[in-house]
Length: 321
Image (cartoon, rainbow, N blue to C red; front, side, top):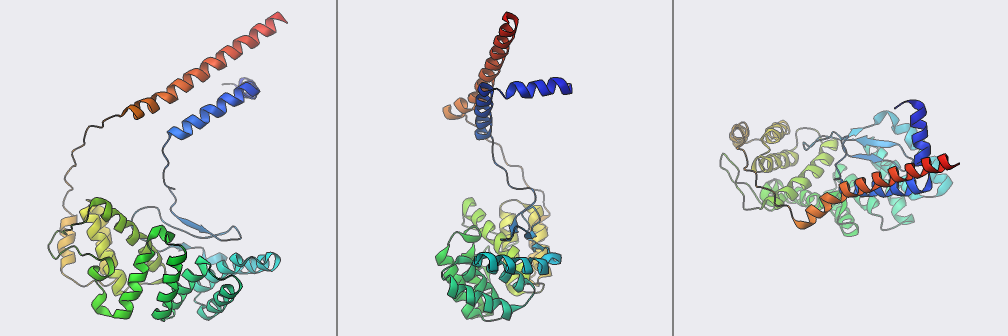
C-alpha cells in the first residue's frame, strides 16, 4: 500500500462508526487468544522504577541476575524519594539492596524502623526472615517467615511453605536434610524414581521447588547440603514428568552443590534414555468450543461487510454532491 493510500485508510478508520467496529473486533480477537508467559523471565522493579534483577527464561533454577552496577545510584534515589513522600516502600526496597550488598546490620536497623512505622507489611516480614537466616539466626528467621506466610500465603507462587520447612530442617539438624522431611515425600532408592503423587501434585511441587531454589541459589553458592537435596528432588520430579533433558541438567547442579550419593549416577543414566512418545488423544470439540471458534470469523466477516457498505455510501454521497 502506498503512503498516500495508507494515510487515507487511517483517516477512513478514524470515522466514529469505524472506531466502534474496530474496537469490537479488537476485543473479540484478544478475548479469543491465549496468554503466554514473558519470554524474558521474571523481573523485579524497584519502587523508583528501576529493575533490581531479571531472570533467565526457562524451567531450570538459576540465580537472579542482579543489576549490581546501579545499587548505589538506586539507594540515593530511594532515600530521596522517601524524604519527599514518606512512603516506606522506598525504604523497603533500599533494604533489599543493603542485603545484597551484605550490609546486614544496616538492613536490619532499617527493617526494624519500617516495622515500627508501618507494622504488618508482608515485605518487612519476608525480608526480615531472609535477613536473619543470612545472619545465621534461624529461630528468628523462622518466626518472621511464618509471619510473612500468615500475612500473604500466596506469595512466591504459594511456595513459602517450603521456606518454612527449610528453616525447620536447619533447626532440627542434618537428619532432616532429606526429601521426606522437606517435601513430605520421597522418590525411592531405585534407579528410576517412583511416587504415589498425581501429575498435578508433582507439577505443584515442581513449581514450589523452582521458586525457592531460584531464591536460595541467588544467595547461597556451592556447596550447600539443603540446596543440593532440593535440586536432587527437583530432578527426580522432572524425570517422572518425562522432562529428561531438564532432569539431567538439574542432577548435575545437585552434584555441584555437593549431593553425595551413587543414586545420582543411576538417575542420570535414566535421564539419558529417550523419552517414550505419549499417544495423542483425539480432541473432542465441545459445543462451546465450536461456537467460540466460529465467533471470530463471523465478527471479522460482519466488520468487513460494514466497512464495504460504509465506503460505498461515501462514494455515492460524493457522486451526488
